[in-house]
Length: 295
Image 1: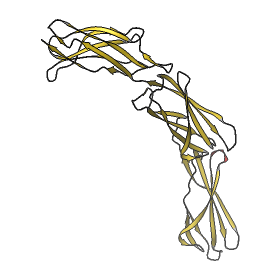
Image 2 (image 1 turned 180 degrees about the vertical axis):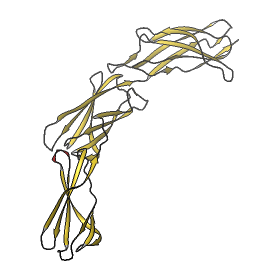
Image 3 (image 1 turned 60 degrees about the vertical axis):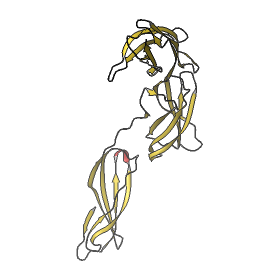
Image 4 (image 1 turned 180 degrees about the horizontal axis):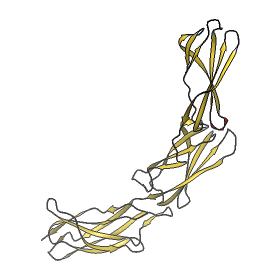
């Protein structure tokens, strides 16, 4: 806003323009409107300035150009100033953060690609540890083509391989132009695992063992499905009492095919099962429970 006051014999003010100059020679003009007072003698002229998202951060100066009813012009440079700050954006981010945990229905991963330069279109490609790729187009969700945030939700199927996934981006500056490589990041995917377990016998004499045997399997880093070798498993027991805590009563390591066979001893009736803590590739897992009866 600026205030103009003319002499009694001076021509009346026909219009006022503001010129805003920012860092790097950035410029924008703005026509002001008479907000209060009279145009011919004494009045306040104002308007809102809307800076585009790509306007640079830094110090801006404002000058005013007034034009009279007879065409005379009066310029006042550097009449005002202001400073623009900007929130920093990561070039590329993935949500949820690493590690990404798979679910029984698959997992959606949100990608945000920030482009401070002109971008007409963009896409992202996920590459798994087995070389399988998933490509999805990005949409502009904030800002504009000169300075904007592009986003997509990428669905990973439940069959996705566990391990390190590469997230790459590409963008085109104009329709028909070639694709340019954008930023790249990585995330770790932790898959689910599954137990197949039998327990025999489940009715025992006190001091006799229960033999638990079965297999721990899951999606492999090569994309196949198979047994998980050399995983340390725990045999757990909780006796039938309110508030009783589970106890580890034995442990076993899976063989080359994910198989195992281990004995567990129960001093009283209760539940027995197999569990493992998971690792960098797999989430923790628990088998079904078996009710153990003491004769």
